[in-house]
Image 1 (cartoon, rainbow, N blue to C red):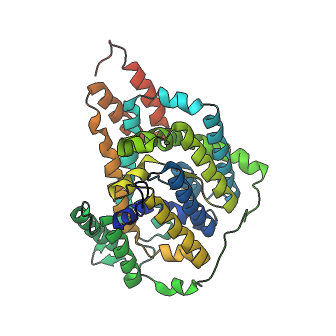
Image 2: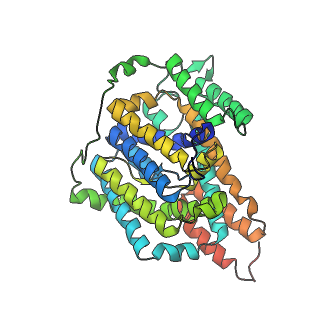
Image 3: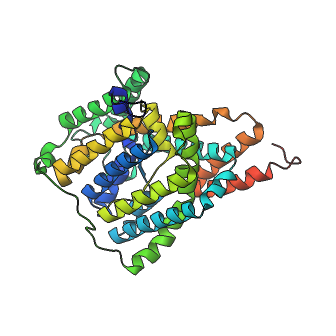
Length: 399
């Protein structure tokens, strides 16, 4: 065990902290867009391991949320989603190689970074409440509050609200307990509830064995897929990736890990995500990125070293190799409301990064960006935040 790699209960709990983001989008893209379940989880696991080894600190791995959410909502084809993954990988490689990302990062004010972090945190918290109330996208698809549980209500109260509220209380009770890590207890409790209250007929379909992920399971996307993906998926995703997965993520890594995060540069993050998307494309998985929200989730639940990356990475790869396509049935044992609990604390941790903004003009930028994000999206918010921030540098303008 070294300073960069620790393997204990807190690291394990922290490694599970971002399941609330990964699982709902992954499950939706498997069921709606037809992506490979083994390809998704193998590429996520491998990406966790590679980034942990290279950066030497806790590194988040997340789906690209704009692409994921829009793909699920509009039921896009497998080819269109895979095309977006390859295009995003190439784009990130280019802006990294040319140094464009360094220029963007250099001229992005701190208030805009905090605005991205606050907005992302609030979006995560909003999504967490939806998951507890049974109104997230994947729950709407099933038209059930807890799609994988046989019990949906206790009296007039949806069971997700009861499970979620209990989970929040337990998490608050154990959040700083080093002997009994909150994240680990919450996930284990979720699995127990899934077994006790779930529809276990699907588990009979799981056939343990030795399964290897396929390479290019859907073939190469056609030209029309690439053309459509550029305008419908890639262009809306780019500002969020640059703002949240590169600039805000680097800032948060520096805050949490100091000198240990010296490899965490704008350029290295772009290269890393390019590699992750190339891997995911080859395996029929979903577009991948890093994200400040994912980092806050891992850190809040106890992850402090790259050991957490190796733990979750090898766990997911092991499940794929042992269960094959049955991995989706196994992971669906965790109730959606439990994933919502994880998401709630990840979002709150990220949102509170604004505490170091003391001046009125900076706070004005942050709050404006939050309002624009809620009314429109984070991409528009990022652009407007930059404009407002630079305008407020003029002495004649006050707030």
